[in-house]
Length: 72
Image (cartoon, rainbow, N blue to C red; front, side):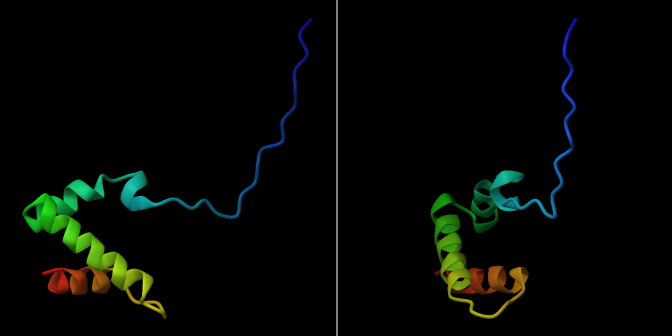
């Protein structure tokens, strides 16, 4: 005779993950759009500077565009 275990399903209010590295290879994409690995890295660094210093909410697309203009 085997003993079965009754499990109550876990309940979650939310699941959080990083889309840009969890589901997408975003570094390769940034490099391709920027034209080179070095340009992609400069763009990501500027994007991160802007993101961490953004203060109040700013749309993601706006920060990406601003980083593209300022990466040089």
